[in-house]
Amino acid sequence: MKKETRSNLSQKLNKMREKINLIDQELLTLLNQRLRTALEIGKIKKEMGKRIYDPRREKDVLNSLKRKNKGSLKEEDLKKIFTTIMKVCRKSQI
Image (tube, rainbow, N blue to C red; front, side, top):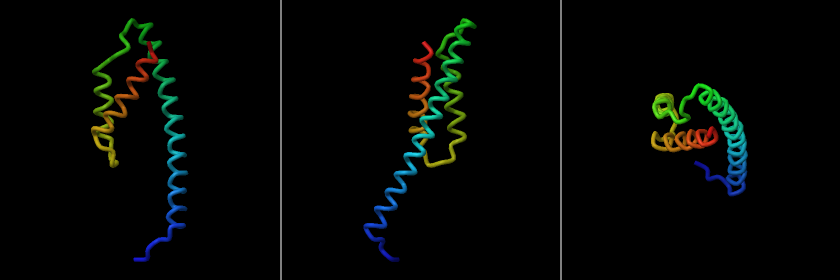
């Protein structure tokens, strides 16, 4: 197999970084959408006299995501990421 030149590798690296930047922008957009939705949910919960924190709901969300995860994201990392996302959204509802 032919070894790639440093220049070709550098071009590949730059293309992959551009791809990461686009994905990060998409994630940022989705996270902001999620937060806006969580804020609306918080308003509804307050009107209903419900508590913001619902551990059973969060457990259900995590279990659903674990079942749907078909990628290479490890279960423990998925849990860390989404637990943090939910915590940030929950704090914003207060």
